[in-house]
Amino acid sequence: MLEWKPDYATGVLSIDSQHKALFDYINRLEKLLETTEVQRSEVDSLLSFLEDFAKLHFIGEESCMARSLCPAYKKNKEGHALFLSNLRFYRGQYENTSEPKDMLGQLHESLVWWMNEHILKVDMQMKGLAKTD
Ligand SMILES: [Fe+2]
Image 1: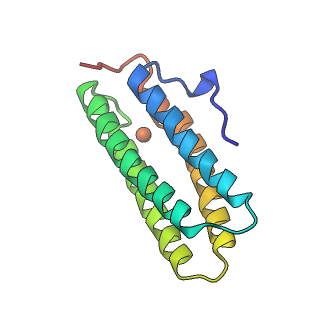
Image 2: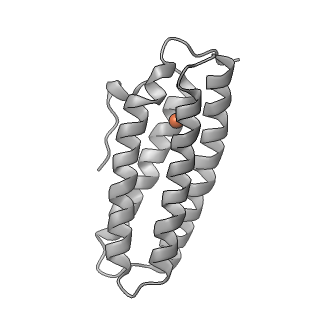
């Protein structure tokens, strides 16, 4: 389970709380993986909510970085594109497999890896710079 820790705090409250919500979506995916049989309807709605929420979060975070003249702006935008293409790739694979758990397990693993890497190395460069209005 992804657990929030102070190291993840950028100091921008709206962004930090959105990151916590993303953790929550990813943890819900892990919970679904623990069930005996994957319920495709639950997975579909979870992944759709995750994608929609992530898109909104990315737009807000990118504009916050732009306003703050954050040097990580470009890297951040690229990281966000990677998140979305990764999510779509695994979702596509998941929809066409008879082994949904394997594919969702790989998706989950890649999301956990991305969140850790991205928040700690990229989003964190906003710390102390961010202008929130
Ligand atoms: Fe970001």
